[in-house]
Image 1 (spheres, rainbow, N blue to C red):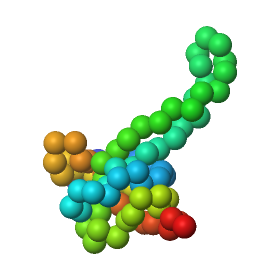
Image 2 (image 1 turned 90 degrees about the horizontal axis):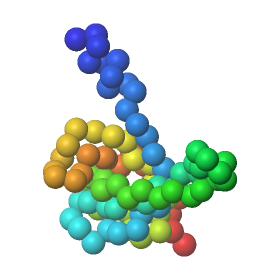
Image 3 (image 1 turned 120 degrees about the vertical axis):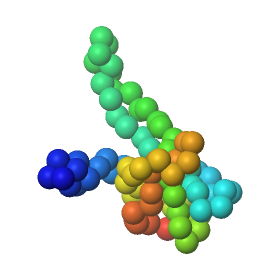
Image 4 (image 1 turned 30 degrees about the vertical axis):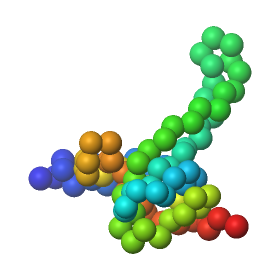
Length: 89
């Protein structure tokens, strides 16, 4: 039981931009990371897309959001919305 509570506290948290809100209670969040190329040592932008659960359908395209890893909610959705950090203009 102690190990379970420790792993629940160390869930991954990502920040990104909402690029799609067309699904019901689901958003697609694009997260950018800066990584260094292993051989050439140049910094590269890498983008990843995550599907996240949005219970109130409150997010819209362009919003900056924070998402947290959770149990699988569907085939591709295993993240949930924590907060909207900045609304789209």
